[in-house]
Image 1 (cartoon, rainbow, N blue to C red):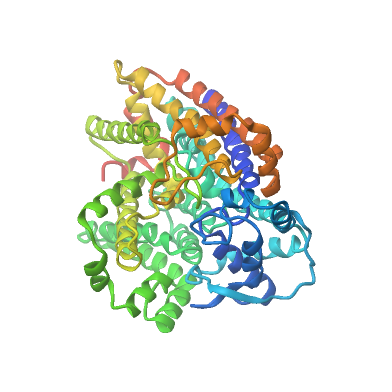
Image 2: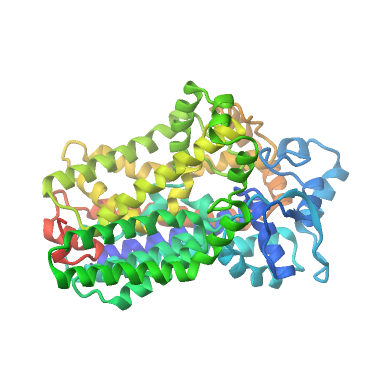
Amino acid sequence: MRQPLFAAMILLTGSLLAGLGFCALLPPFEGFDETAHYGYIQQIAQTGTWPRLNDPLPAEVGDYLKVAPSSRARGGRWSYPDFFAEAPATIRAGTNAVHGERDPARPWRTGVGTNWESHHPPLYYSLLAPVWLLSKGWSIHAQFVLLRGVSYLLAWTGLVIATITIARTNAGSQAAPLLVVAPALWPALFPMWLPEMARLGNDSLVLLLVAAAWVVASKAIGCRGTVRHFALLGAICGLGLLTKATFLALVAALGLFLTWRAWHARRDGAALATAMSQLLVFGLVTSAISGWWYAKNLLDTGDLLGSFVTTTLERQGGLLEGLSENFSLSQAARGLGATAMTFLWVGTWSATLPPRVVEIPLGILVAVIAAGWMSHAVRTRRASTLDVIALLTLALFVAGLLWQTLIFMALLAVYSGSAWYLHCLAPLLAPLIGRGLTEALTWRRARPLVGALTIYPLLFLPFATALQLFHFAGCLHSSVQEPHVSLSAFAACAAAPRELLGNLAILGNPALGLQLLGAGWLAMLIGVAVVIARQPRAPAPTAKAEEVDGSPDRDRGR
C-alpha cells in the first residue's frame, strides 16, 4: 500500500499546484459564466439577498467589461487581440481595471444585463460571500485569485477524501495501484478538470459533496448500515441539491436503488421494513433540507428548477416550437460529438482549441477505459453496488445533458452542451476509471499503447494551455465558427515569448501562475509514471479488486 499512497500524494500535490496555477493565469471573468457567478456572490455579500429571476448583474461587472478585455462569448467591448492592438491609453485603462485597488466602502449598484445564474441554489455563493467581503478592497484580479483558489480547494478536497477512503478500505490488500489512486489520477487523465474547477462556479462544491455522499453511501448500503447513515446521506444530498440541480442525478440514482432494494425484499417482512425505513429517512431528510428551494422555484416560475433558459423558452412558445425553427439533424449530430469533447477539453469561455488531430488520443483513452471496464465486468461477472449506483448516476446525468442540449438548440440555435459538468462526479466515477484502466493495462500486446495513452493527457495539457495563453496575450485570433488553431499559428506566437508574457502580466500574474502550473504538471507526470510502472501485468485477484469501493461482500453481484 505504501507505493500507491506515495503516488497518490504526488498526484494530489500536482493537481493542487496546477489548479492554483490556473486560478492565477486566467484573466478575470474568463471562466465559464464567471460574470454571473461573481455577480451572485457579490449580491449576497453586499445586500444579504440572492438574485431573483431577471435580476441584473452588478454594475461593477459592466464597468470592468467596458475598459478591459474579455472572451468573445461574453460580448464585452474588447476581445483580447483587439485590446492589445489599441492605443497605449486604452491598455493603461484596462491594466488599471485589472490591477487597481478598489474602494472597500463602495455600495452595491445594479447594472445592465440579466444574471442568468439566478436559478442556482444559494449555498455555494453564501459560502464564498465572506471571502468576497474579505477581499473587497483588493484589485479584481487578486480577488479572483482568492475566490477561485478557495473554490478550487473545495473540489480538490473532494478528491483527497475519495482517495483516503479507498486507501483505508484496501489497507493491507494487494489492490492494483491504479485502483487505489483512481480519484487522485482524475485530473491527470482528464485535463479539462483543471480549468473547470479552477473557475468561479458551484461545480467545485458539488464535487466535494459527491465525495462525502459516496463515502457515507458505502457505509449505509452495507450490512452494518443504520438509519443514522441514511439520515446523514440525506443531509449531504440535501446540501448537494442546495448547491446545484445537477446533484439530482445522484439523488435519483440512490432513490431508485433503495426502491429496488425494498422491492427485492418484499417477501421478507423484517427486511422490507428495514429497507422502507431507510428509503423513507433518506427521502425525508433530503426533502427537508432542500425541498423549500425547489418549491419556491415552482411557485415563482412554474418550473421546478427555475432555469433562466427554460423559463425564457416557455415564453417564446416552448421546446417543440423552438426545435421546429432551429433544429438541424446534421448540426445536431455534430453537436453531440462536440458536447462529448467538452468533457475532455474546451478550456475556458474563449475556447481556443488545438488542431482536432491532437484531441483524438484523448477520445481513444476514454474508449479504452470503457472497454477495459466492460472486459473486467464480463470476466468477473459481477459489479459492486456502488458501481451500479455510479453507472445509473452517469446515465441520468447524461440524459440531463442531452435535455440541456435540446433546450439550447430550441432557444439559441446552439448545438452543443456542457459535458465538463461531468467532472463533478469524479469521486463516484473514479473507481470505474481505475478498474477499466487496470484491466486495459493487463492486455499484453496493448499495454505499451495503453501506457502511452495514459501519459498523453499530460503532454496535451501544456500545449492546449499555451494556446489559451497566446489568445489571452492577443496573438491568436480564433473564431466561434472555427475555434481550432493551426500549428503554424502556434509556432508564430511561440516565437515572441517576452512580448506575450508582458501582455499576460497586464491581465494577471503569469510568473506565479506558470510556476505553479509547471511544478504541478511535473508532479502529476511523475505520479502517473510511478503508477504505470508499478501496475501488475496480470489481473488483480477478483475479491481484492472488488473491495476498492468499500462496499461489503454481501452486496456484491446484486
